[in-house]
Image 1 (cartoon, one colour):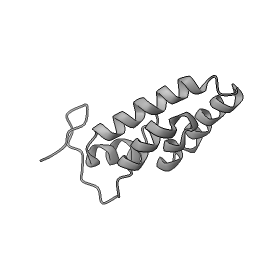
Image 2: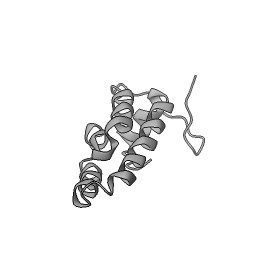
Image 3: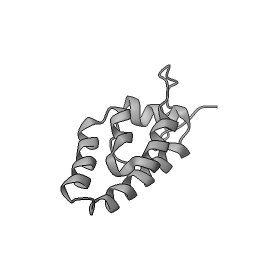
Length: 95
């Protein structure tokens, strides 16, 4: 079975190891700190989420935890091929 992207193009198979489950679970549990972004190699985005939480003394954590939760669910609902193509190969940073 071939996987298609949003434009109907075939997503090529990749030999990379998927970090989908790890990033998804960390996004749901520790999304407030942006840990899932660091795991995927998105250092700038991880620092942004962490900074929002720390600079606002945790008040911004409500927003960053929602972002992490939503991203964790999105990661876990993708197939391994889709995930690797979107988040590891093409480096789609948000959602």
